[in-house]
Image (cartoon, rainbow, N blue to C red; front, side, top):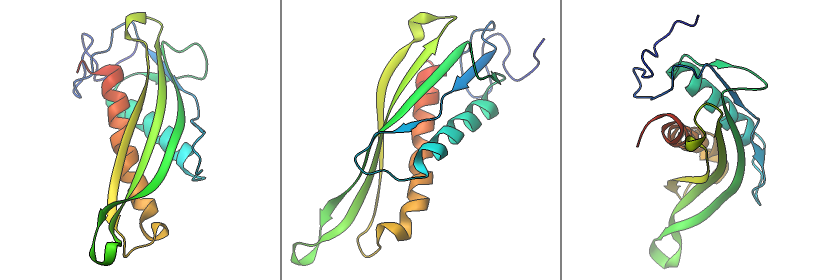
Length: 155
């Protein structure tokens, strides 16, 4: 029998998980964005696994999980977000879009496939390489929170 923070189908995080749901799996995210940032797929995969591990009593398995996640990075782009003097970008925006397929074998009505997009702006005085690592971390945290909430929190 599993002991944990999930009692009566609810956890301290606000997650609503059926008591008969015991396991989860997260397939490594694939990167299909036109610009491929090499560490992004593994970082978002690891962040999602860590979030589920820390916020639920579900046990990670490789196959035949009660709930399963399959994710794809579909967008990674930098665009100017505001114009300053001399028509030059004052701020740039890093945007990351992922597509997630969630399958719940215990409650198929919860299944979904949807996109999540988050962004961060940064001063154009910095090159992307100066700020990319910290921006990715911040964006990933928000994307993972969005996926977790869509999957386990009734919102």
